[in-house]
Length: 65
View 1 (cartoon, rainbow, N blue to C red):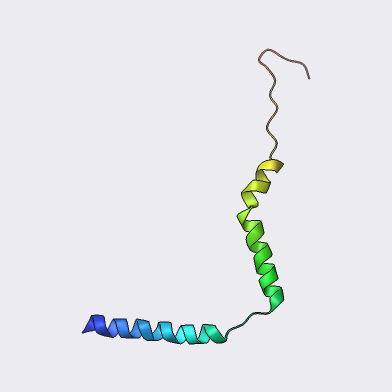
View 2 (tube, rainbow, N blue to C red; view 1 turned 30 degrees about the vertical axis):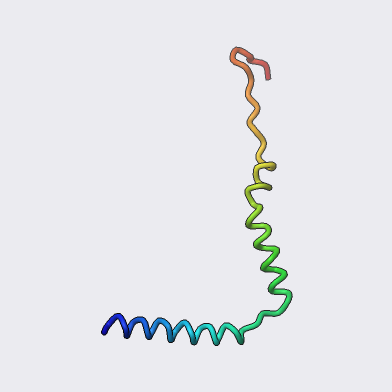
């Protein structure tokens, strides 16, 4: 009986949230900003590897400045 009640409550909540989400709209600038943020976030590692320069090391025994 508890499983039936829990299933009914979960399905009811999902149906209510779905109906609410269908009526919810966002303006176009929010979609554009969201898309730009997702593009930057997904390519973040690609751009950071170009900005990190390797350390320059001298061979052993080279004491020049």
